[in-house]
Image 1 (tube, rainbow, N blue to C red):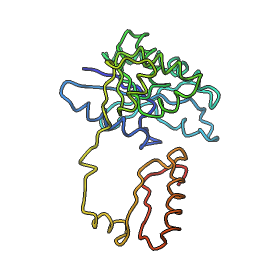
Image 2: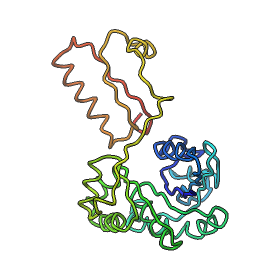
Image 3: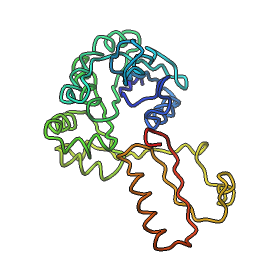
Image 4: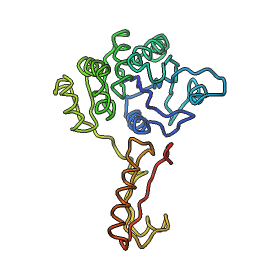
Length: 261
């Protein structure tokens, strides 16, 4: 089966760790017998002027191979901050002709989109344009956060209702999708997997030795270091606990990277 994966949440040469959960799922899926895929990971257009906070977008290559999979990065226009209501439409408009040409060389039978808005919405428009079924994966903030935005919620509702199939990475997301009007029988709950060749248990003393901590309890936080992950709340909470229990042997360890580093 030939599948086109559509998601701006996919790594690239500038941000190799961006959306690795999408990449890992699709890389393993591509190894199944009879399965092949290509990826459309659209990138906002930014002129190559070498200045500005968003200049890194201009440095993303147009096409690359990641773990043996062809990944395309067509450009689309995006209005920062104020253009969210048009984001899905502009994404579709920017990539439609590119995807149509790609289908001539790679006749995909299904579009697999990740993130309901704007990616899933744009993918659904592509599916109607190319007469191709669309499966959309809900990932988290695309439902929990965007559904509270009155101008974005209608796009989420329309996308969830009209996709051929919807994947939720948790039962909580499934319930939120149902509240948006998505039929329960159209939703499958498939949690993010774990590559056990990369992540596996080791003896506590081995792990503690690697980070130079052997005599303390460890509180571990694994997340991208951005404000909405609440790392600052965890630090403040631990401070309150230590103030009440100054002799408690505890250490807070963060694993991640981001602007809050």
